[in-house]
View (cartoon, rainbow, N blue to C red):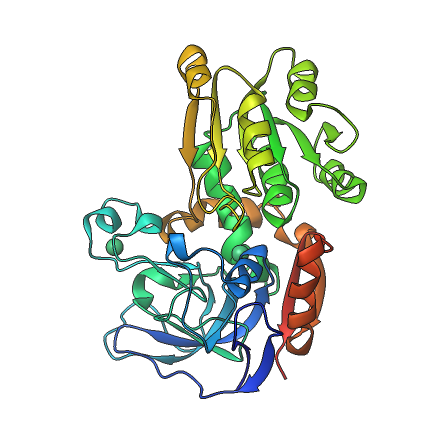
Length: 354
Ligand SMILES: [Zn+2]
Ligand SMILES: [Zn+2]
């Protein structure tokens, strides 16, 4: 089968012919219907994130945002059948540890990151293996077209968890999203659907325009003001209830926490770059004085996909709004290369693997 293979960090990615996967007894193999192209693939390709455990030994197939159709089922799998349409979260869980059994599969003790770790070759490929499929293969209702689900496996579901669960975003709250890539724009759309007044912050006008079309009530171009956080505090009369750093660089993280009002809560979704290497200096005394909460947010539990899928079914959420273009597998390397200059918009989806 054809697949996008990382042969050497930072060197051009290649589309190669590789062996198709075989299911483990607890796993399934899915034909990939679509797979989003994400800045996280770019980080993995650059060789960032060894501090996070997301640095596979090449050669390794990239891609972590797939949806698919089940084509082969391991002998111990009970709840998934051939022909099922499934969403596939990137945060594979074991289903057996305490965290999994208590509804926190996204931070499973035995977490395996699809496309980021040796154990889980990725989904820029005709077929992908899903381990522990009874927990990690999320059935899609018939009413949700497989194409609609192509973008939800990482950024959309990550933003859902960040806004609905970790951010606990509610009606009428001011929510500021710093960094309007795929995660940030998804967060704008989802926070708006949850009833918040959303402010989007980025450096690029076209991303700010997109945020407005997705429901942002205000936007700030951080390249045109001295202090983006102060702009947000002014717009919100003292600060946002909830801030999101959807990018993970020092500037967006600090701007996000500095956008908050007293008692506010910050949700960190973006992982840092090689520049920060996992660490950003934060104004901790202000966290004390203002009783600021700093919350991490990783992926979404498969067991809570149904909440998000219900909102997609009823039209309150529409992941296709985030899909900026559909591309073929041969275009994935160039699309990832364009991310070096932040020159992509929304969620490009690879949907042609021939
Ligand atoms: Zn587990
Ligand atoms: Zn992703």
